[in-house]
Image (cartoon, rainbow, N blue to C red; front, side, top):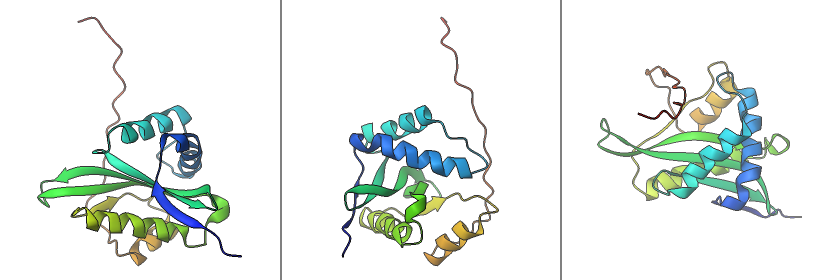
Length: 159
């Protein structure tokens, strides 16, 4: 029995399933907490402006089993457009079947076709399995250290 595996751009109709996938991912990451409203808002922001990025889904027999989220920005160091690989997630019960590799290869092919110059991602420090996965696909560790400043949403004030 052959399975039907397709990778295609996500649509608004996929939002609910995608936010569930992201919730599972963020539950595992030490820096983040699942928040369905935030995940939906973030995905919608990408969908409403294709110049911001792309979300691709992997469907197996019609059902979404994985996703990859690419954000577009400009690097002055590279002198052109680059990608921030924000999320790569495969549903727990479908891990270990090569779907993550298929999604990542699709994203890299997309980046090459569209003349992006670099793909950057963050992975949890203790998560050696993820780091090894990305190394196998040609990613190398950066000497850069990510730092963050969270900015609280401003209350609407009449100025």
